Length: 193
Image (cartoon, rainbow, N blue to C red; front, side, top):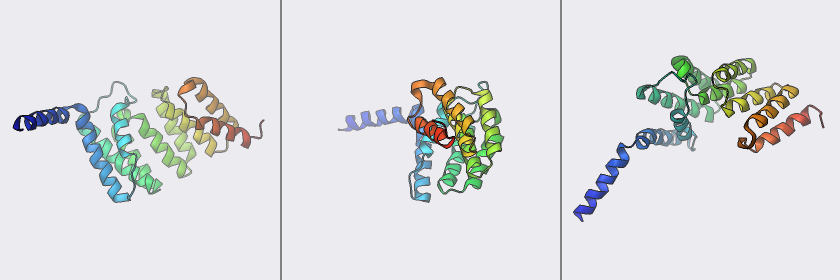
């Protein structure tokens, strides 16, 4: 029996020393804290994993583990604010990350910042953020989606139609199904057949 306990401990040590354990364990703790604070499960774990897995906009920029942990923590706080619909507070947190880590911020942070700005009615500012991120990382689909959403919110139907079509052309079968619904909605509001 003692031999089995030793093998189990050895296996557990391997798992704990692996990179995925070191990455996801703090994220799980943050996610549990968020759930206790807000009473609902959030996408903090998913957001944190995206922070680790997405390339930063500046491909030459490198983040150390302390910076990544800081980004994850601030992302968690911003996600909590977004879940509470405290858009101004969330915007400030996302801007803090973008300002502090400039070229090293993952593209998902720009998308989340743009969503907050859209909710606050600052469409021009949201458009500028998306253009800035798109200039560096042009093949990130959520940037395309957010760009089209900004046109939808500003009721610029021809531009929205153009952006949805471009998204479908560039990403073909990788697009989520609701893109077709949004394109259809843009056509309907523009009074086109």
